[in-house]
Length: 414
Image (tube, rainbow, N blue to C red; front, side, top):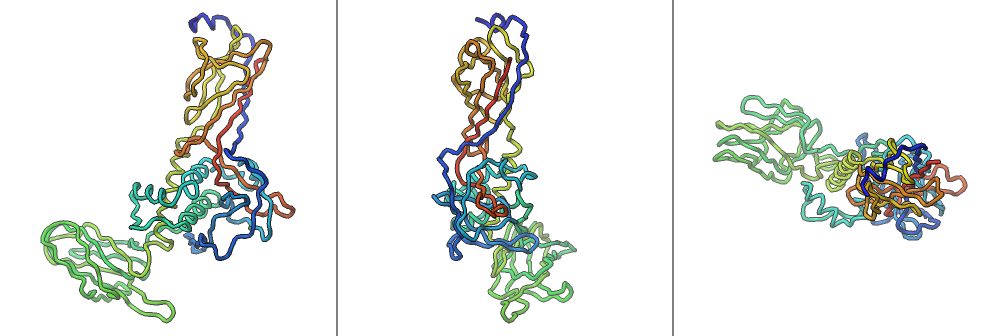
């Protein structure tokens, strides 16, 4: 039977579609209990925000055996055992202004503890982050993940400004001056030269009086990239009681010869390249970048019925709008294509399908299930909401529990 024969008569009844979205955890979540966190947990870390404030981070552990992250930096932590219930995102009354469920779902699915620290480290290296020989530690992965979530829910920016990058670089003649704006002690420098020449490094506290850094000169025979390791304490300007040594705010390269410096990079001595640990910053940046990409790719699931009609006991056509293919279940009704063949495979976005209900039925529910793959297509955040008395100010949680996206499309043609 062809489509022209199957749908030959004009419809006389309108078709309406209503949608209901619900997350479904792949594990059974009963009543959850949150206890006060341990002060000396090995996964506790401290992060610094761009405004100079700081916060402690740790994985929130609910009994029995469910890990979670805080969804509200400003909310309070319980000081006694508190009961939490698994809820959907819409149950978070204090987060209605934040439409970031897609991003947080991606972060939860692509970070710790859903992924181990070895796999996270592999992904960061593949993305071009230099982690060194060591992998992420658990407390670093937790700190970066929590910071990324707070960035979305509370607008808090982790301080990821590199300390080893000058605030301003000035080329003048054969000299390149790097102004850091704060005291920096250098361990080494790397420069890109356009030709042969000799390069010496000078330092200054105020940008006026300069002195040559001991043993800092390098000689290049041709164009290329060169690295010079500086001696211990070579760029120390002062030693302060209780604060250690201080470096210089200004550095200048002076070139002898025809070469010119195209670029200069620095490695700091006695500190990392950020106010937060380098690996925390790397994972934080990676998670937010992936979350933004997931948001850009995501499409809200819906069933369009603009041209749907009831013809010869068959209703349609319907078209699925979603980010990825999904499996559909119509209960007692049958899903068919334009030729009347039963559909047994997942339906791709944009594909047309029809509904053949049982005799006498005037409505049906088509349930779409998206398992939620690692790339961020589908899935939903399972939230933990405190239900104890006087717990209205307790922080809501994002449970690190896999969840399928389930959407019920209620179709009525009566």
